Length: 163
Image: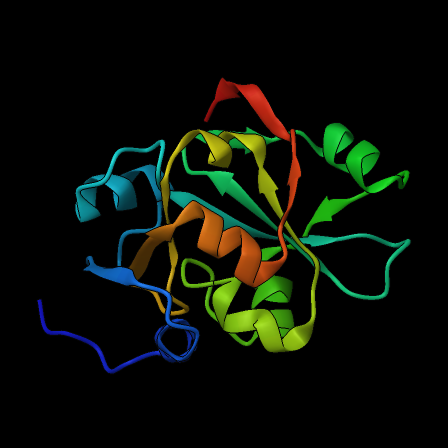
């Protein structure tokens, strides 16, 4: 598969001296578990980025959730101290982020100043795979570096049932 140009998320990591690995896959793959298989990483390492809307907050928030899990909206709302949160529909998520669904990346959205939450299952692995900001490109980096860079708050929001 041809290599893509360097993405802003890669430039950001390099500027901060954060080591990462790039994994390419067919951008036509939309299922996060299939992405994990395509990049040859276990589902425990691969995280999807969800764009959430919260009427009590001015800006959307991002939730990094393991690719084989579903989000528990009630637990997320409780963790945020609000009554209601909702997953942004695909078209709205794309308008808000300027990125395509399947390529939404917290690393590529740092300039927006949005809050980023990492599900606690992310603390069970040393390295995390996240979108690079373009469909077909995933970046693998140290969990601790990702948390520090993004200012992630750890929350328990994955449903016990796997997706």
